[in-house]
Image (cartoon, rainbow, N blue to C red; front, top):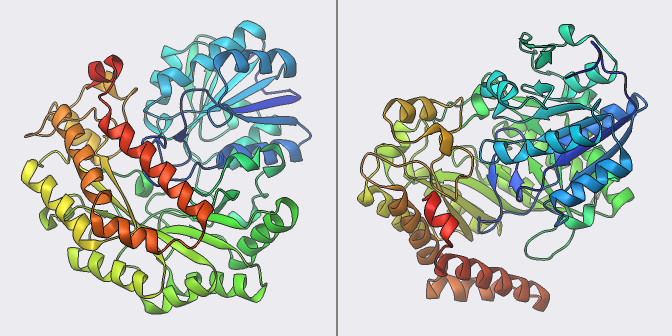
Length: 487
């Protein structure tokens, strides 16, 4: 229970709990370990929160326990040694019940600690989670930065928008907070509190960090939370402010590899080119990747992006079946995907293609169409994710109404470990089809030859081979008993 009506504290411990290397920021939730080409990312939201706490005089620590290969025992030791007044943790739908064990551990060590959780899962299940876990005190819904500032400024909890909290025996849900419209006012993330050398590019193993370039998405795909979390609005940082942060990363931390975080980096053509021009004019000499939509890319944008150091773009191609694309609300065509990949190849920019199988209506024929389309596009990397009904999405409501999953299965499964079945396919079938898709994409003779020819560094080639061997072994070795029980 929160001991006072406001937080009057000194030390803050912000953590990713030791429950697996996962996406935990914004709409992204799920295991990274089971994907083929995703780099591990810094806990960006925790770093923003820590920066805000520090500006108000708090002493902060950030611990990414999964990336540090640390255990629950390590968490206990950290709390005993640092003895924080506030514990902040990231949670996600696939791990939430495991994550919140941290609150119980912290309470046993420091009965007066205030525990705070944030994550997209809490956008929907805030009251339920507080009711289920008595050692959790406060839930942050939506964007975290301004809410953190209110907490750090000791504002009465009753007056803080965007939180749900425990007040004696009552659970109080305050009104939603308005979205931040001026992202430039945020401080830079507290990278000095991170072990930056843990986060590297998969190919070169050079340090890589994340730059938040904008938020929001105007589209309403049935499987994605981005639009609803942002009220279907796009908010972008100024090109100068983005370049300032890049410059700070280069000068202070010697980091020259970046992931530009945005739901669709290329949606505003003029802004995209301005960001690239800013990077070029400062002679920052960096390399970076980002996400895009196949219908928001063209030769002019790609030309500027390549000059500014872009080496890879992730595209949500999703399906090789046009009817599935239409029903999912993606609002793209197969031909637009073909054009986007072809253009990137012309400019020497690698493509990372993201596909989704297991939409509620899909059968084996539709999934195999997606596998064939992925092979036809000949992207540089691909992942095949199994549809996961994130709470708050239209797909969650549809699949729940059709009885295609059990709510208690949300935790313990994710986009690489199926918990949803379709009207035609079981979870076991979807799991087999996912493995088949990955193997058929990566084990093509032409793909292997083309990839090896593109590598001009022995260390990079070794990293590719190690990653490829680990991935294939994971797919070919039969799952353990626990995984079989889940599926």
